[in-house]
Length: 171
Image (tube, rainbow, N blue to C red; front, top):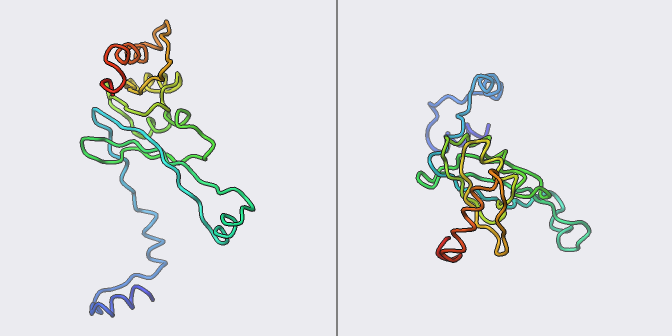
């Protein structure tokens, strides 16, 4: 109905319009393209998506309940500006807890540099990057300390470079 009306207004009455049952039948055979692969660098960050629905404005204004939102964690290839990974999580999950899922979707090549903000400066993030044979580059905290062990090699190097160059020059 609606599509037929739009085509009639556009003067394209000769174009056939499939009915909804045809769309449903053809939908089963459609394969969606997969995410593109990450190149030599992957930039990771997240943002919040507020959930709105009927009556949301009243609860927001009058404060009867807290607003809810979801977080979308994106991985972007900076050379092509393509989003190569996207994961949606609840607002209670921290960025560092979802990095492994983002890397699973992005399928980075060995040696890929994963760049994230200070939220990704956690042991679990370095371990997730190591599992994917990628190098995590995240600014260490101001009071970060060196740790012994192979798990901390990348982070220790970032701490030493930050101390040598200074935080602004390292960034």
